[in-house]
Image (cartoon, rainbow, N blue to C red; front, top):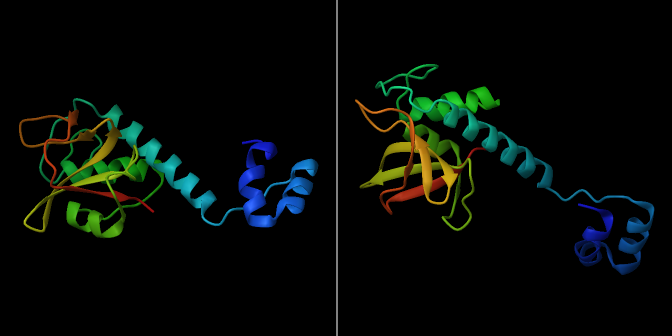
Length: 157
């Protein structure tokens, strides 16, 4: 983003004269949380690509990779390779994330599947209503459309 593109939001924060001076000298203003949000988005994108690279890997209950996975094993592996440690189970991962609304979800967020208050499955949101996940015994890591509305979203911090 160029300094001129930042002028409207800067004027609201710093006043017209300060924003124009800042733009004229090519400076920037640090917005609290912006750097950490950008870093989280980069981490999530990297984890998403790692999960996708495991397409076709067999499901195995309790497996955390690199060649076999269960659902939370795939998310744990993907984020670990991207540089962020997650807890082992889907329920623990749910409690470890910052919960976001369906409208605020973005690629790389975790998708948690619920039944009666119990988190029973997790995948990585790929966009367009789809997730990368390790579904069940006899299946493989794959991209699939979200099949239920009983989901919530979590952003890895």
